[in-house]
Length: 195
Image 1 (cartoon, helix red, strand yellow):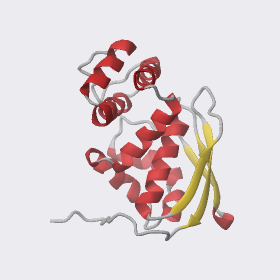
Image 2: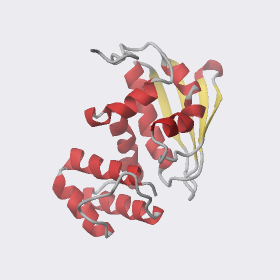
Image 3: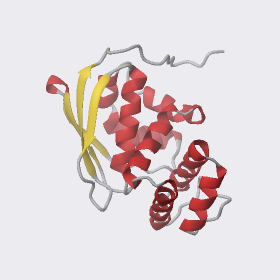
Image 4: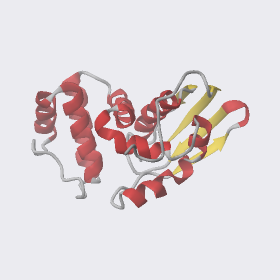
């Protein structure tokens, strides 16, 4: 599994629960406490062991932990680049949803080493969407659920995002109900950097 994913989990644990939580999870998973090199490839089993060890250490369900990881990727100040990449998807949450099919290719432009699972959006009539998250990252559906919920908040949209069972290969189908695209004021975002 790509080192960027493992490094994100490492930083998420440190930011949320401290260095001791990371060290305990790393030891239990059999990975170096020094962490991961972002540009190296790692066996996907390492990621699975790490998520399981972190969930056990924190007494949390693994899927809930991964959903929180998705939220962290959008909302934590250290992940501003991820939020920025996602916000390039459009000026509102509906446009953002319609841009998700292109997200893996956009991400590769910024980080060629990152291989996101394919995404395919269906629907949109009456605000009902289905997002197909392709195979490639076990837990990807849970991460996508957290990411989408955080992006709805970021845009100020009121949306209900749910996911069914995830397949062993990581593929999942999420349902998205966009109730009010202008429910609240979203977080400020500008295409150009303030100078």
